[in-house]
Length: 253
Image (cartoon, rainbow, N blue to C red; front, side, top):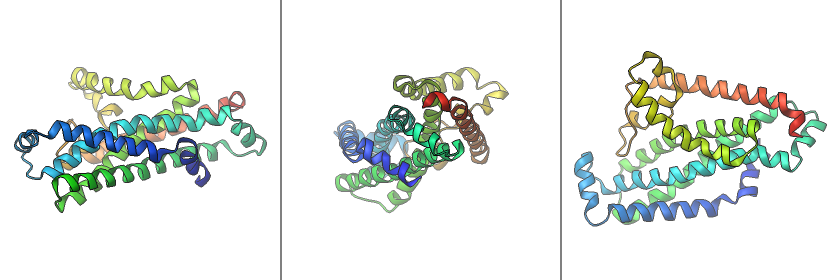
């Protein structure tokens, strides 16, 4: 898995991309919140710390940009390996499919967490520089790391499965936008039905559990139930990825 993880940095040179995300996200939120707008947000959210508000809003913007990048990188771990003949090597070496998929998933998860740590750290430093700091920003940064990584891990797991199925970047990248639109439709149209609570789209954002200044919609579920549904779906997607890879391995090489 270590080699697979290193490939994310070798192939994609993410530090430059992340620097661009931080600059864009922080600048955009500074423009939006300047001119007294941040005081209106403080009043609306009943939050006294301008730094805390800016930290959340800037990271929300950065997290959206990085989500697309995470999906691309996860899909690339499959599509690039097929293109470059890596799967031929693994087939000749008789490496078990389960080990290959476990390495792909583990590296993708590690990349998400490490990247989010980097992004949140530097966005928080910018918030401290512009608005000053509060002790609660440390805890807030930790909660943001958990919530953003939680959502991103679901998407990269799905991206790896879809890359195995369709081998197409455009389709895989469209997953984020399709799911985000579907979340709104499902919540508004199906929320009244009891089976809606078992739909994963209601459980891929846990920010509302932590009372963050910038948070998602509270869908009325408990945290243990949401985590249970999330884990069940993640495991199912992982199993489907392994099954798909095992069945298509000959065609992938």
